[in-house]
Image 1: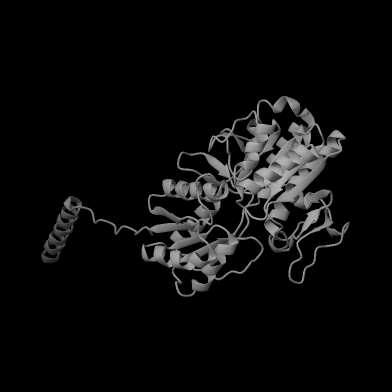
Image 2: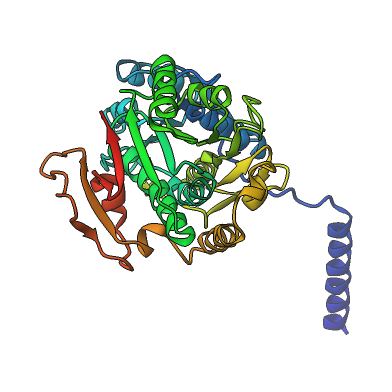
Length: 412
């Protein structure tokens, strides 16, 4: 009986303790601290009125809009001599990701990467592929959208003459121009047209008066009726509007984003969403990754979902706020044969699925012009640098593409 009484008492105590536990407030879980990120972008030019830095400034804002724990700060007109001082100034203010938005002024950041091991540094790639564990290099596959633009430009020209106002020969420019020229050549073959593509260099990225003079020369002396550019001012677009010829844009939707012109002049543009790359870098930092991906070269298959739910690929045709085939000017659309429209849609869809690429599909044949690199002279005219159907390496595309493709006409 004694043992039975003890058991009853013990049972009553257990029940009582359980009741008390059920009445007690639940223990609060220790919150996981979210890593605060300050994304600092050093822009090589001013932001206002430029497509390159303008697009990257928008990218920083879009990432900050999506992530409450991300702040975006920046400096403008940053040259190589100011890259490190500005970076250290912003690091002192809390920056833990510092980006140089052009290679020539982004590379000095590598010199301080070891000094700040807890900071990610990053730089656009022009041709140098140097990295460190916390020094990231990146570029978007803009040539994919440029190929689609080339198809459209080739269909639109009535004179058979297309002009490119370009900055200066470098791997980045030669590669992007090649994507456009291949699109023009595919359109010419499909439509049985003879089309010439003229390129004339201004000497730098942002020289508004020189760009204007070149654009006017292309129209007046070479009978160009479609203009595009590999420079950063709005001068080429201004000349296209004044001369009544078509303009094909780059880097940003200059109609919908800046209101620089309208679709009576701008046949189509492509938009670069640097935010797709910046989001990936930010997410790597938030995760505390000490060994992030250091060479990033995403194309149309890679996307970001913006704060408002819009899904954007790294690059895409865009004009007056519309994308894809809808980006083609309503005035230009009736002038483009259905066969070209079908091909633009097909190739865009394939690239967004990662199933097709113009530099894989086509042979890359040297024009004999370009830029001699250290230990890598321009291949002789007619040299097949890469066979059709062979996937080019990222190293080749980013650092060794030093030639114009066959058929490009370089003006002195």
